[in-house]
Length: 90
View 1 (cartoon, rainbow, N blue to C red):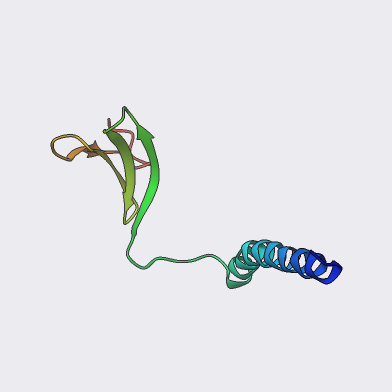
View 2 (view 1 turned 135 degrees about the vertical axis):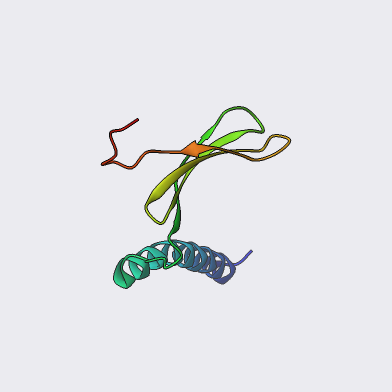
């Protein structure tokens, strides 16, 4: 293997590594410039907890109200709606 072969191989490796690093940080920079993404659907995932290998508890926000879902078993179940932050009746 000659000197130019080694130089071209190293240059190609550096170019590929630079593209990988720039693409990752480039997407992050674009996301910061674009600002927060607003969803008009009113539906968002608040959190999720794995109970076992199949089942998962998920908290979903729907137009300001939160609901707990149990998914992954033989059927998906709505466990219940969480009370609003200002509601102290429960």
